[in-house]
Image (cartoon, rainbow, N blue to C red; front, side):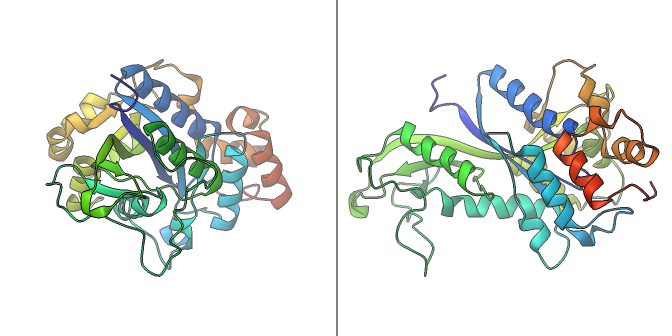
Length: 307
């Protein structure tokens, strides 16, 4: 497959990140490596989306602290970014709504006019949002106006280094020259962009708990978006999926990372990290990056907390 015929992917991880661990970062890295090895995907970005304070989980520290720790954890990454949107809402948001938020806004941050290629060519193209600057977000006035696939991907990639919120759509879209005469639009390149939920096998297993997830949301998350699962503690993902009719139905849309099942980061968790901090366990350096540890100690987080 050529670069432009591969599916371009943004990985989105939702969660408490209480605190964010080395395991979370390795989850992104392992997922990207695995997807690249399949030969069908190019991962162009990752998003860390911490949950809202009203989630109600015991021991959950303020999103102000969690956002800072997440920023510190990804500060040396050139492709993973932290998105505060979920934390900044008035109340807790479902995972489904977070995915839909990023999908819907991707069309606004590409800086290009998007048209769905699965519909006839006379389908109205989607332009810039109303009441906003007409200057495309990614436009560079120093480059020729004739776009290419490489330039389009560069625009998306550039956005990852400049802003937190990166919002890819789910379907296949055709990028259309933003300077083209819309009466005679020519499609010059098709690049499929998808946003995939990245999670551990523990979240996948939670789909099987009766009443925990809204079934309509599950249909959207697994059926419309898709999931990349990084197993933890050598979990049997096939067994997990067979326990849910929805997971069985959309099994083709669930990609399980099949690398080293004994990966040292697969046993790292926020819970273990909090316990290590409370007990003064030196192994905390194996779980958390040093900037995160320094911030926790400076802010006196988790030290006297329970659980």
